Amino acid sequence: MDLWQLHIFVSVVENKSFSKASEVINLSQPTVSSHIKELEDYFQCRLLDRLGKITEPTKAGVILYQYSKKLLTLRDQAESALHDFLGKTKGNLFIGGSTIPSGYIIPRLIGPFSKQFPDIRIELAAGDTMQIVREIKKGKIELGIVGAKIDDPQIKQEKLVADEMKLIIPLNHKWAKKTSVDCSKLFEEKFIAREKGSGTWQSILKSMDNAGFNSKKMNTSITMGNTVSVIQGILNHVGISILSTIAVQDDIDKGRLKALSVKGLDLSRFFYLTLSKKRTLSPICNKFIEFARLAFLDDQK
Image (cartoon, rainbow, N blue to C red; front, side, top):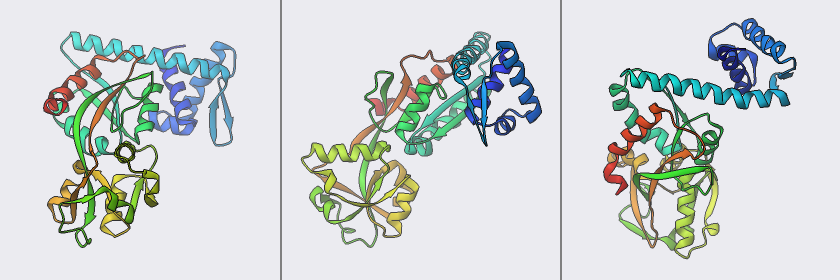
């Protein structure tokens, strides 16, 4: 048994397929199968079950997967620490972001960070807030930036970027000449909602309920899974919605959409650096965190 075999095993488990794993790690499928067989011979038990097109770990495989992830993480941390000590910062960084951070905030950080540390390879995963939190807890990503405060004993967060949400309407809407509307008026309009895992949507509902309105009474017959879809829905008169101004600034600047304040509603919020309390961060991840903190120093105040 060696770390390379464990790497292959982990890839098969996470991709749920020998063929997909072989593509990811750039090995032939027979070579992948051979390494898995060697592992099974070493432990004298079956580690993976092929269930049609899906491959799942056996109970023994689940145990090996958990320890393999720890060993591979420790290997990466050791390599990163030694490279850092020798003044040659290099390695891999796996980060994630919910819709707005992954589309607008993290890319702003990756560009200058990569110029400063050209030998660091970065992988960015996108998902809603709860998906990113789950990936952090599993150890698949080290760091996330999300738009909701999470109540989870395994997760720690800190404010990173201030954000202001506003009501977004098309230019020919009846409120187009206004700069603000009362929150009560929103309940008269067709509203585009976001999926339940969206940090933006959670913030909107919480703000309404805190202001004494019943968010459940909103006309939200339309739900869309990402900000791009919501923007297109507003442009095509599907409905109106409250969105981060970070996400719609380009459309506002080009005169395609208009942003209004909502009276009686606190739509200010933060995007949060999100980490696992139980996992030790790699030196590379710590460098990225410090870089992000300095980049958004004014927003943290």
